[in-house]
Image (cartoon, rainbow, N blue to C red):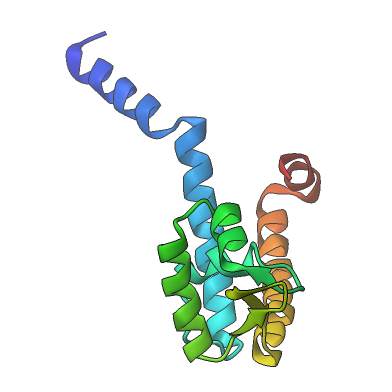
Length: 141
């Protein structure tokens, strides 16, 4: 095998490993969902907001817990929460057990986003199932 062929094969192996392919899959999945979320009327939602919505649950939670679950700093989580509070998706309440702490909860608009997102997730999942087959997608999940 000549040198250009070896380099080509090496480049292919580097760019088509499982880790990179899964990252690309994740990016595509999130991009598709975000497009549908925007189409559903949530135009101000950005990819960084998923750090909150994928970790908040349906009850109130402290900022420190959210940051730990999302594997980001409390400062970064605080910045995201401030933005989401400004656009009406979350509210900060004083923690009745610790007056210094804040509990974060979804507002009515935040709950609507969660409901709309579940519809979007189902649509994107159906797109992938159509491409690779339901069995293959279920096995991957």
